[in-house]
Image 1 (tube, helix red, strand yellow):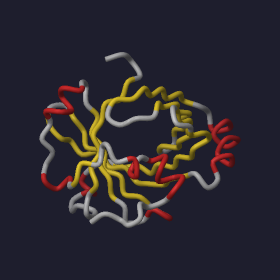
Image 2: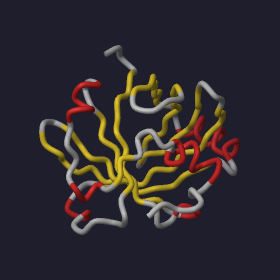
Image 3: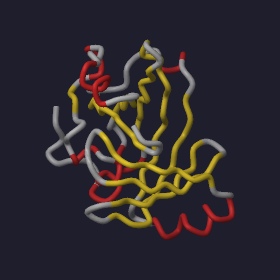
Length: 161
């Protein structure tokens, strides 16, 4: 797989699972500078670090390049994302075989939404992985749960059970 390629599966959880405080977590704020049918450009603050990210649009496997930027650049770009933002707390949960479940509990307008992602080294590994029951529904191919869609359109309506 070429460098800068992301292979992931995404799951919709019915709620916040117990025991999250036993794992490391950090607040993430991300805002979208541009979203087209082919690419998205965003800025993100993850803890104390700030980034500019360019991603291709799609499900499962996508091109992703993340570049560290300084606080001054982040501060100048952040106002340009007004109305196109998500805020969440991400918790990293070991999933065995070197995999990590990144569980996101959303805040603000997206409060109540809980989604988990797992990144894989190959498409074969992604297809073969058997998620634990508590992860809920696989929404990898459901565009309503992409962060860019959540930032632009809010919670899916009607909200799935």
